[in-house]
Amino acid sequence: MARVGRRDSIVWLPWIGQSFLAVVLLATLVQAQSPATKPIPKPPVTRIDNVKETLHGVEVTDPYRWLEDQEAPETRAWIAAQNAYTDSVLSELPGVAGLKQRLPGGSGGSTES
Picture 1 (cartoon, helix red, strand yellow):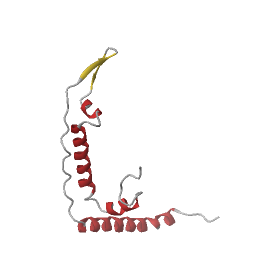
Picture 2: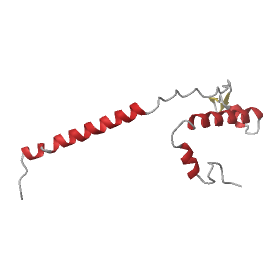
Picture 3: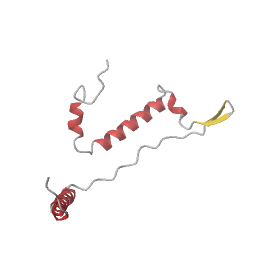
Picture 4: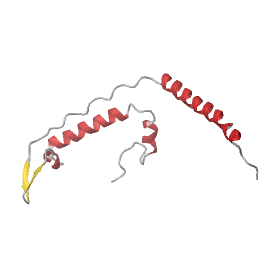
């Protein structure tokens, strides 16, 4: 069995250093050439109610209770606003169009009937 001395183990260090430097430089160049990203807009404002009730002696705060009624026009409007916001943020990401095509139905929509 050949003995590996300390001198032999140092030989690979410059190679790792050069590879690491190449990766860092490549990442820096890619980032420098990519278009500046726009700041993410703030999501729609969500109403917060001051709803409190006592259950078994414990006070419970439920500021979003108004969202429990899925058929209420205000809840439906909130859902639509949240979906529009989500779509606007996701549409700015690269590759989203291709990902939507890979989902069932080809449009990203539900396949339930």
